[in-house]
Length: 281
Length: 127
Image (cartoon, rainbow over all chains, first blue to last red; front, side):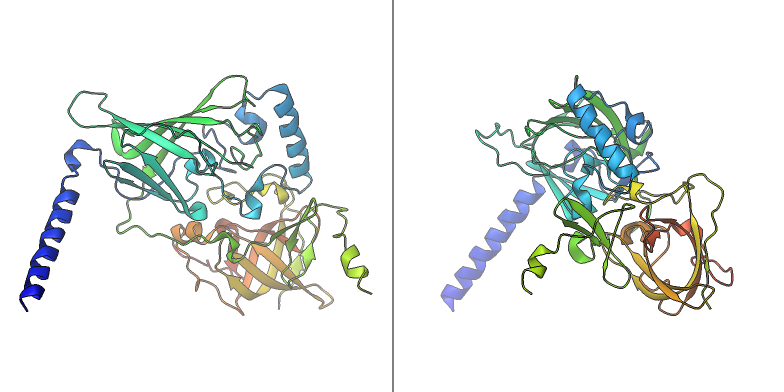
């Protein structure tokens, strides 16, 4: 009985300590980014730069080699293919494309880490703000490894801008559905400056600069997101493999028909190579 | 009594307010410059990721039935447009304008601003 009482006291003390630790997060030091955010602008096709048209209209500063890859991709898309955009196979958008926020996102700020939770492809970004150094090696991932620092740009004693650098990115990735490519060397570096619009706190701004060896210079794009006014926000599940009707066989992609069979996506597309079925006869 | 009305509508994109914003893949696989109008009966409404689908039975003038696989936006996007998994159901008669697959196979893409019940009533009143 006595031991049980002591155990209860110890447990209560531990809980109080834990709660005290959680309360040590001083909300007044950080901006209010709560709620549900979704992209502003872009329209048709959700281009990477929302201020310019999809495709060539983006005027991406690609090197000659990668402009040629992009053009071949556009020709394939015009015929009905998917070009270099890998997302039809449920390969996630990755960084920086996921920050288009075609579907909603939520941002949770803690002193050590800011979490960006994106509905599309159920993507989680962790932006470490605990002062850590870059690891000697980073295992590549689609979301990448992000380190951030907070800035108080107006000197009011409250952080307003999160400055983020992301490295360690895995491919294949494209900037958007037009197939704008990244270099295959995996050396992309993404820099972001995220802050509320001073004139409208229902708008979040993100200045994104991409440094990549497929570009002739760093490419900076300004994106923004609006806070969805609906309370409580509605969140949807996104499990890409649930009913993905795109099928890649060899180098050909097909789609599944209403009656469960394969359909071509391009005129004159050959059927799949069935040699391994024929050899069983 | 679904019937296929392949109407080569005037050229021009189906942009409007509910145009394509497909996060999952490029929309270029659909021929937006040559839309097709379909009348048919819903076989199944798949409220699934990464895209919703309407499986639509469409009869031609000779009575032959073709099953169309019609891709819509993600459930998340449809919810923001006032839809749910119960908005349409098997047996509903629909009239919609789609952007067909470039291959000519019975598939295509639809948007919420180009779909009605066959009697002309809106599928979602708020839209």
